[in-house]
Length: 157
Ligand code: CMX
Ligand code: CO
Picture 1 (spheres, helix red, strand yellow):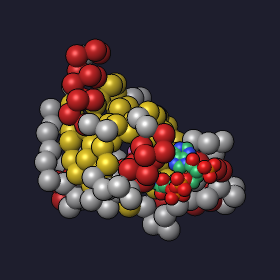
Picture 2 (cartoon, helix red, strand yellow):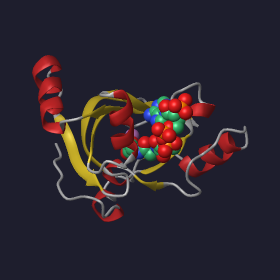
Picture 3 (cartoon, rainbow, N blue to C red):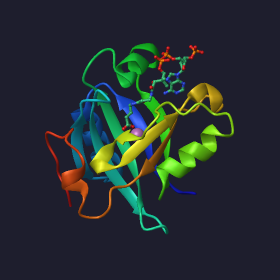
Picture 4 (cartoon, helix red, strand yellow):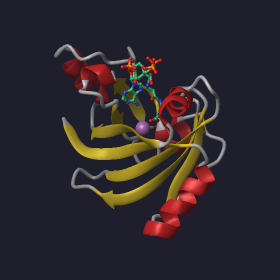
């Protein structure tokens, strides 16, 4: 069951400048940063609020680290802006199987590693009325450090 907006993914050309915009304009601070080599991004998570399912909602600011990444291709075509939305679930495997059964293309056979050791998959935007949609199951509390190897820098509250 999808129980929260986990994050909104925003593609940007310069992560540091964009982080500074969100800090100076709204007062949002960086909760976490990492490089995800597999996804081809450097990212910053800004925590906006906690949610009733025990999770939280974030903005995910995304800078491409190579031209042929999903975000790199999207930036080249569209410029900066909202790239995807992500719904949080306690069971990404069950929800992606359920949604695949409804005829929506799920991009990965098995969920991959996302921010903070979460497990993620994506639904094809052409099957979702033009919205690239991600499903996220957060790492268990305390498991984060062990759960992902795609990180070269991290900050935490
Ligand atoms: N939102 C809406 N539509 C999108 C889109 C997006 N973010 N990205 C691509 N599209 C559309 C394109 O506009 C294009 O439509 P038209 O044919 O009408 O022009 C179509 O989808 C195909 O796009 P493309 O540029 O040819 O790109 P690809 O098919 O190579 O890739 C996609 C599209 C969705 C399969 C790819 O972006 C993907 O695999 N995304 C999932 C991974 C990802 O986005 N990772 C970065 C975020 C990591 C994270 O959140 O942690
Ligand atoms: Co995302």
